[in-house]
Image 1 (cartoon, rainbow, N blue to C red):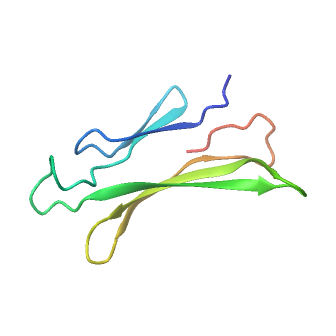
Image 2 (image 1 turned 135 degrees about the horizontal axis):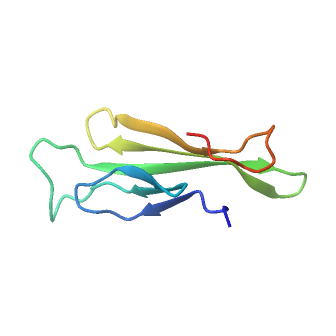
Image 3 (image 1 turned 60 degrees about the vertical axis):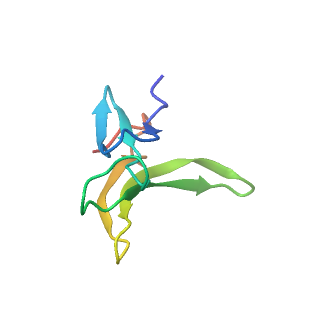
Length: 99
């Protein structure tokens, strides 16, 4: 139907990538636990998902954009790999995916 833009998955151990398959982004959450796996000197990370919504007079309307990035569990809580997954186009009624 074209309305699914992205899927966010829990984790796949050390994988924390995003990939596009048939116009849908699939993104892993990243490894942030300290008990079962990891690499020496590899900062744990968590994926942040940020969705901007359009607001109507009385309620939220539709998704305007979807962005994601990872925060590292380091001294600075570094932000890495920021990307816009999807953005609604104001001049295009078919809601194309912009990469």
